[in-house]
Image 1 (cartoon, rainbow, N blue to C red):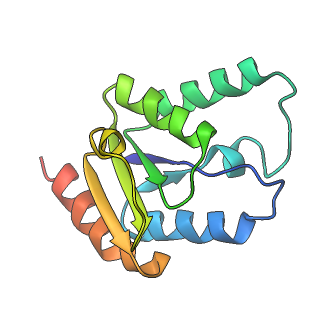
Image 2 (cartoon, one colour):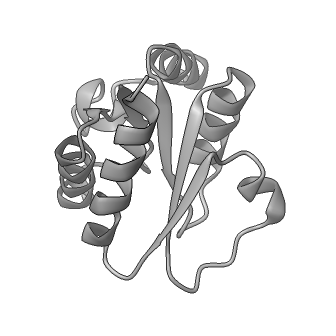
Length: 135
């Protein structure tokens, strides 16, 4: 089961956090995919925003699920959630304890996981992976 991991583009400044999240997802059993890591290689390669979002949509459609950290607000990542929801992909929402999100965002998530530190999500992700792949 392949998971599209959303991330904000910060010109590589958040590479350690992206790598850590991808590793956690992979250790839970999923195949991890992150557009910023796997397509853009942490660099700006798209000058045309239409091509950027077309590329993101194509990759989301090639995945089984999408993982979205709702701790920080982000327009681009929210659009990716909308693409996944519109295409009936499973959505895993994670957020740091104490984060407040709107019911509309909760309404598109198949599962919501809260964490104190990001490593806390691995056991929940493993349980979800086993549940979603047992058929």
